Length: 79
Image (cartoon, rainbow, N blue to C red):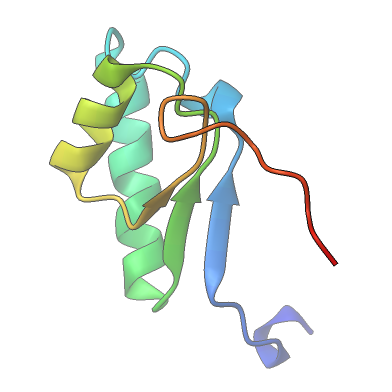
């Protein structure tokens, strides 16, 4: 039963936000997913933030965490 697991984060792949700066439908979908995550006490992580326009929209939505080329290039893990 999935309800028994503690889930702290909900991660969305970058393809889900690729047109967020141009598409009202995408914007509203991400807004709804963010509201769902908040209602379940989860933090939303958006991957694939590659442009300033995407970042500005996500900042306006007050998304918790972002990953992508706009924020910084991926780094190799160091052990």
